[in-house]
Length: 96
Image (tube, rainbow, N blue to C red):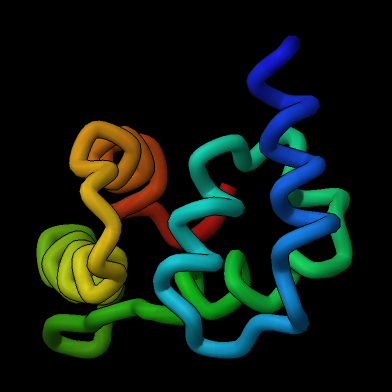
Protein backbone atom coordinates (compact mmCIF):
# COMPACT_ATOMS: atom_id res chain seq x y z
CA UNK A 1 0.00 0.00 0.00
CA UNK A 2 2.85 2.38 0.77
CA UNK A 3 4.27 1.88 -2.73
CA UNK A 4 0.97 2.93 -4.31
CA UNK A 5 0.82 6.12 -2.26
CA UNK A 6 4.37 7.09 -3.20
CA UNK A 7 3.67 6.24 -6.82
CA UNK A 8 0.54 8.38 -6.95
CA UNK A 9 2.36 11.29 -5.31
CA UNK A 10 5.13 11.08 -7.89
CA UNK A 11 2.70 11.01 -10.78
CA UNK A 12 0.56 13.86 -9.52
CA UNK A 13 3.37 16.14 -8.33
CA UNK A 14 6.20 15.47 -10.75
CA UNK A 15 4.54 14.57 -13.99
CA UNK A 16 3.54 17.13 -16.58
CA UNK A 17 1.10 16.15 -19.32
CA UNK A 18 2.82 13.31 -21.13
CA UNK A 19 2.91 12.28 -24.75
CA UNK A 20 5.06 9.54 -26.25
CA UNK A 21 7.24 9.55 -23.17
CA UNK A 22 8.63 6.10 -22.43
CA UNK A 23 9.69 7.12 -18.91
CA UNK A 24 6.14 8.24 -18.11
CA UNK A 25 4.86 4.98 -19.54
CA UNK A 26 7.28 3.02 -17.36
CA UNK A 27 6.23 4.95 -14.28
CA UNK A 28 2.52 4.49 -14.94
CA UNK A 29 2.68 0.82 -15.89
CA UNK A 30 4.84 -0.07 -12.90
CA UNK A 31 1.58 0.07 -10.93
CA UNK A 32 -1.09 -0.16 -13.61
CA UNK A 33 -4.00 -0.79 -11.24
CA UNK A 34 -3.38 2.49 -9.41
CA UNK A 35 -2.37 4.47 -12.50
CA UNK A 36 -5.24 3.57 -14.82
CA UNK A 37 -7.49 6.01 -12.95
CA UNK A 38 -4.97 8.87 -12.91
CA UNK A 39 -5.64 11.33 -15.71
CA UNK A 40 -1.94 12.00 -16.40
CA UNK A 41 -1.29 8.29 -16.96
CA UNK A 42 -3.98 7.75 -19.58
CA UNK A 43 -1.87 8.97 -22.50
CA UNK A 44 1.35 7.09 -21.54
CA UNK A 45 -0.64 3.87 -21.05
CA UNK A 46 -2.45 4.42 -24.35
CA UNK A 47 0.89 5.07 -26.08
CA UNK A 48 2.22 1.71 -24.85
CA UNK A 49 -0.82 -0.31 -25.88
CA UNK A 50 -1.00 1.43 -29.25
CA UNK A 51 2.23 -0.36 -30.16
CA UNK A 52 0.87 -3.41 -31.97
CA UNK A 53 2.67 -5.43 -34.61
CA UNK A 54 1.02 -7.73 -37.09
CA UNK A 55 2.06 -10.66 -39.20
CA UNK A 56 -0.06 -11.72 -42.15
CA UNK A 57 -2.70 -9.25 -41.01
CA UNK A 58 -3.01 -10.71 -37.49
CA UNK A 59 -1.75 -9.48 -34.13
CA UNK A 60 1.75 -10.88 -33.50
CA UNK A 61 2.54 -11.09 -29.76
CA UNK A 62 6.28 -11.71 -30.31
CA UNK A 63 6.82 -8.72 -32.58
CA UNK A 64 4.64 -6.58 -30.36
CA UNK A 65 6.71 -7.56 -27.32
CA UNK A 66 9.94 -6.62 -29.13
CA UNK A 67 8.56 -3.23 -30.21
CA UNK A 68 7.25 -2.49 -26.73
CA UNK A 69 10.57 -3.60 -25.21
CA UNK A 70 12.40 -1.17 -27.49
CA UNK A 71 10.01 1.59 -26.45
CA UNK A 72 10.25 0.94 -22.69
CA UNK A 73 14.05 0.63 -22.84
CA UNK A 74 14.29 3.98 -24.64
CA UNK A 75 13.77 5.43 -21.16
CA UNK A 76 17.26 5.67 -19.71
CA UNK A 77 16.26 4.79 -16.13
CA UNK A 78 18.11 1.96 -14.42
CA UNK A 79 14.88 0.20 -13.47
CA UNK A 80 15.49 -3.01 -15.37
CA UNK A 81 13.46 -5.01 -12.85
CA UNK A 82 10.41 -2.75 -13.32
CA UNK A 83 10.81 -2.76 -17.10
CA UNK A 84 10.90 -6.56 -17.17
CA UNK A 85 7.86 -6.73 -14.87
CA UNK A 86 5.93 -4.44 -17.23
CA UNK A 87 6.96 -6.43 -20.29
CA UNK A 88 6.12 -9.77 -18.66
CA UNK A 89 2.69 -8.53 -17.62
CA UNK A 90 1.71 -6.37 -20.62
CA UNK A 91 4.29 -6.73 -23.36
CA UNK A 92 2.54 -9.21 -25.62
CA UNK A 93 -1.16 -8.59 -24.98
CA UNK A 94 -3.56 -6.36 -26.88
CA UNK A 95 -4.64 -4.51 -23.72
CA UNK A 96 -5.69 -5.41 -20.17
